[in-house]
Amino acid sequence: MRIRTGFGYDVHQLREGLPFWLGGIQIEHTHGALGHSDADVLIHVICDALLGAANLRDIGFHFPDTDPQYKGIDSKRLLAEVMRLLRERGYQIGNIDSTICLERPKVNPHISEMKRVLAEVMGIPEDDISIKATTTEKLGFVGRQEGVAAYATVLILQA
Ligand SMILES: [Zn+2]
Image (cartoon, rainbow, N blue to C red; front, side, top):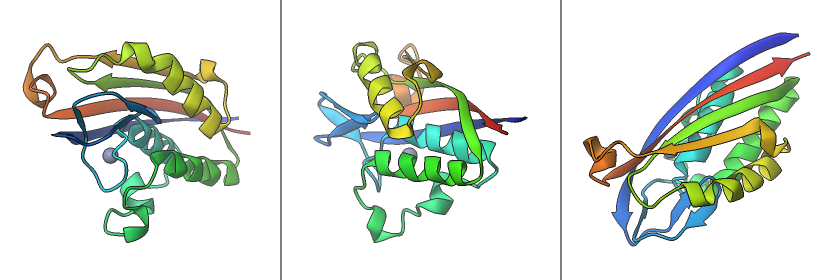
């Protein structure tokens, strides 16, 4: 059994009036994340961590933001494709741990719904997906509510 780990980091700007997609669900807020896709920062870091663990480059390599077919795309579709790439190579998910850095709104009330949605997209148990949230104590671009950042680590297994 081969065990590999992967890591992902991503940032998106927050802009007034945009829909805010986070962890596969839409969150009620005055601002939303700006990006070529739906700008779901949590899904992007999970994709990057999975791709990194399998040494398959990164999300921008597979889904370039210069390609019009990915404009406004639901990031859940990107995650499903990343899972397909890993399964094709015989990888299984061990577990995922992630942290969202956001000043407002509060993420905690939405975490169980995010876990439910992501587990369904990935075809793995909710228990294998950990989502945590933190503010940055009003410091930096997250603290000024100019952006949202996220980190994820994953463990994958190959029989
Ligand atoms: Zn992103």
